[in-house]
Image 1 (cartoon, helix red, strand yellow):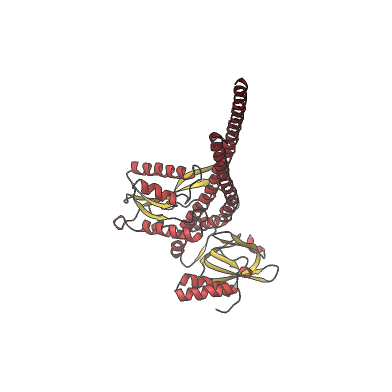
Image 2 (image 1 turned 120 degrees about the horizontal axis):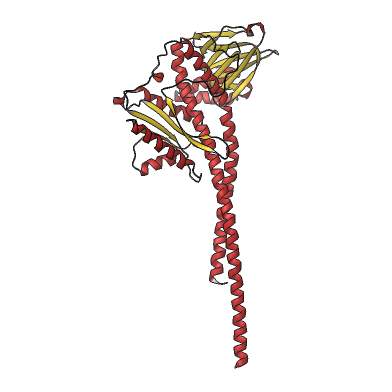
Length: 129
Length: 299
């Protein structure tokens, strides 16, 4: 069983493409019910991720990866973790100044969905919101 | 220069400039196919995963009770979403999709249902307008490069009219007509029913040891189904849009290649005709000179 291994196989897919996949020791995400950390051997779980959230993947080689995830689901199975997102961006692909701009724009236009998206981008890029 | 020769030369020039245009369109379409095909493939992991998650969810919640899964047999109105292109010059692409749509509409009518048109692409819109048929809703301007946002807009409108009752102008079923990208040479217009949903595994068989996981849910299964199912419909519409975009480019490439080849052919035969016209002109001039000279000599 997968519980005996000390790695999680993580697949992060957005509607447009597969964003990232690899081995990880832990995945941290925030569902609508609250923060959750997934370790290898976690019981199967299907959760809805909170909008404008950030998923942290602790890679098994050390180091961690922040990913801005908007409108997604978290599926934990014995095979690993799958994150299905409407929009997902790796922290290193995020242009913080552009995210800041779109946040300002979303705030002035009162577009809540766009605001949440921009917030999650900024958080993943390690900027204060 | 004789009048006839001039006419030929003018036609050759005109065909040549047309050929330049069709050749450029062929090259553009060829480069778009590659991109569009890559997008079709890139979007596949998501639809595979969401199908798997919904199957697991469906297998676990014994009583699947969701409006999107419910057969609405009492409603006679049925939505038909037809995906076509905004621009023409794509061979039989639009004609095939529209033909498939009429076949489907006929079939639905024979079942006593009343098809209602939802159209994507300027070509479908003008086809229906010309025939004075009612258009429930229409979207144009993104047929070649569709975004997920577009798919969401279309899917949400469809879901919305599905949930409404007949009296409120709702529909009881939703069908989608799109063009399947089989290969660069074959594209096929297909009709599928999207709502009410029938949850099925994708065409690839799951691996031997694959068991649907016994999930815990966060939040409740009902709430999850509530957000997952519309997402699933959006994914289906998005996939249909992407496939149609790839098919459109492939059809256009083929049509433009044929047009370029025809132009070549035409230039060749026109050049022959022009040459023989020139030859005839020279012959005539010579015989005129010879005739004139001998007339002078006789005098």
